[in-house]
Amino acid sequence: MWRGGLESEFLHNRAIADRPVAVFAAGGPYAVDDAAVLDAGTCQADAFASFGSESRETYVVAPACVFGFAPWFEVGVAVERSLDGGAWGTAIEPGLKAVLGGIEEAGLSFGIASGLTYDRTARSVAGYSLVGLVSLELSEPITVNLNAGYERDRAAASDHFVWGAGVAFQASENLAFIAEAFGQDEGRTGFQAGFRPTIFNGHVDLDFVYGRNVTGESGNWFSAGTSVRF
Image 1: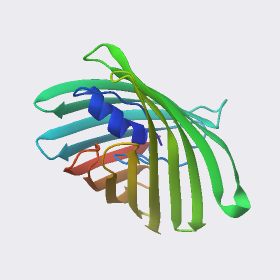
Image 2: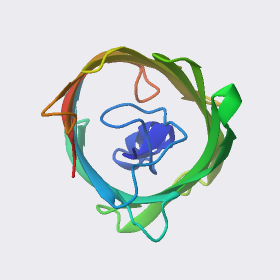
Image 3: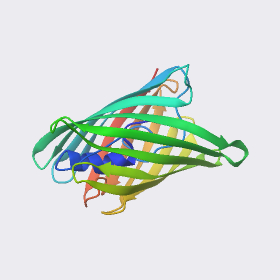
Image 4: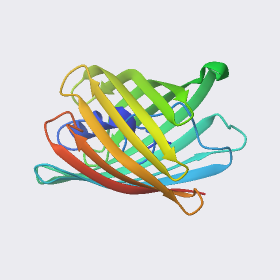
């Protein structure tokens, strides 16, 4: 499910302080995305808050839907409000995610995600991205997700390679553990890990996540949020 993706972690945290952003992830505060979309005719809404070192704060609301006439496409938008260096900024991040196919017997699936970031404070498009997605089901409870792609930072007039790798362990029907690493061709590698309880007969996920260097700069982050499917 989409919320801003690994390109968002770097672009937004340049766009809201001097920088730009874009769009998708495995739901909630996570940066690395999987190569899957929601069931046809369903929607999901993510909402979460992140608190970082040096009084940094981020609040995100991100709805996404898959329509019955195009069951391989997921369309969404993330609205992000951030505090960095004592200044508030707002970004609007529309995006599109598509499943391209897979190899069922190997547990492989492939997808692609694209998006852009509109910096509402500067009233301009801060950046855009295109990211390839691969998911590999190693066993029934363990899935590995790999991301790699291109990001354009319009504010800095620069291009970047972005990457991410994550693993999800489904410990039980109602509890998953997720860990990931992500980065770009410059700056520090980011890490996040957390647990995800599922409640209300599978309709609601809760996320509790610790992160390090999430924005490409040294610092600790704590995130909490929820995802509701309907």
